[in-house]
Length: 110
Image (cartoon, rainbow, N blue to C red; front, side, top):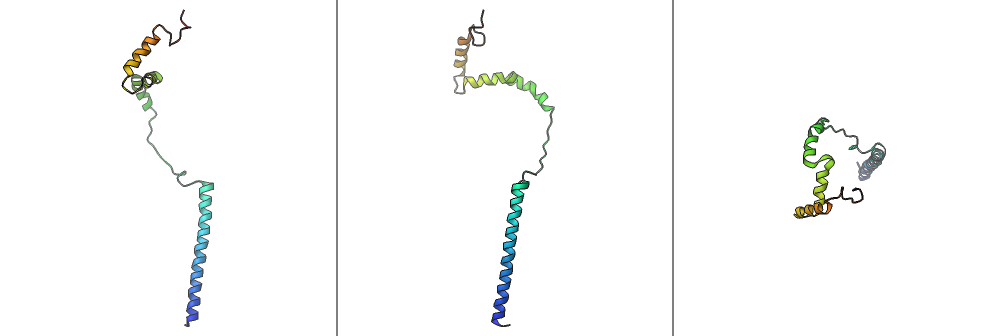
């Protein structure tokens, strides 16, 4: 083979491989576009399973009521008293302020 034939063969092989890469890149771009924008990313279609017992809430309800009160009344009161260590003083002040009031309101008393 002559040098010219070798150069032509190498050039043809390079062009064929470049053309194949470009085609593959275009096809991949199109498939990725369709996958991510039309069908959704694969993470969305992943199925998850969790062990769930709907009856456990009935068992834990009593503990919650005991600890936090019905509908969290005790939690709301604790949050309102603060967390800086002066909650006893605030509670005493609130009880003194609300003494003789009906839920803090004067106009509902007879």
